[in-house]
Image (tube, rainbow, N blue to C red):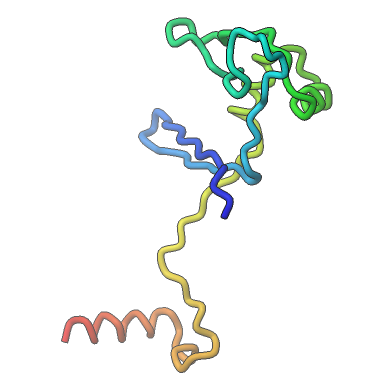
Length: 124
């Protein structure tokens, strides 16, 4: 089972939320320099007071460098901003009721009829 997907919550001033999830599993950029100031998978770490990258000149892995070149980003900060804001995000769909009953006796009912019968049965 693949559990490496990120979820992004965005709050808007009109009191609404936007919930999105990544389409593909998250691939974290890795620092290839073994003697770097930050460990391999922490190149996105920022200073909490300034919100700037702790090591903005870290040499990223080949996959990240290839994507940076393809997208035309010159710095790690631009690339990480792209990943955070414009990356591979999609809306999350919440399914409350699933009507996958095409082969059962319930398939003869419309959803309105089915739920009407359910309400009457539960009310009895």
